Image 1: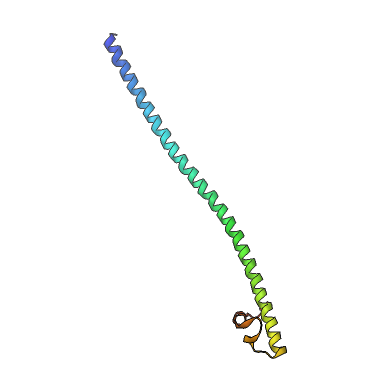
Image 2: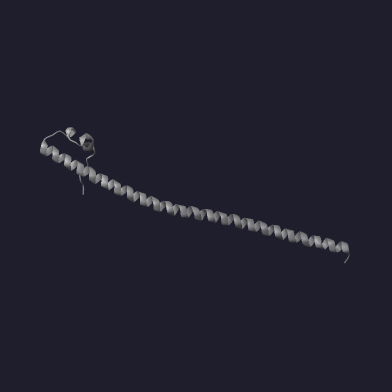
Length: 109
């Protein structure tokens, strides 16, 4: 084999090597892109679970506060109605005022 033939053969070997290397790098880049997407999805999923838990907690707190306010309003209405029946005063002249009377809800429980 002449020197020129060896050089041409070596160049062809190098071309094939570089082609394989570029294909491998392309595959690695695709894999990295897919893994980055998976990481993003996992982060969003984790964040969603955290937000759902926080939402549940806040909803429970809101429900508790609502129950407390409803009971407070009912007790205020009861006190007001007992004052009306016992003292004979008009609803607007009591300490609690007409605003409470508008919000009084009958106790359904």
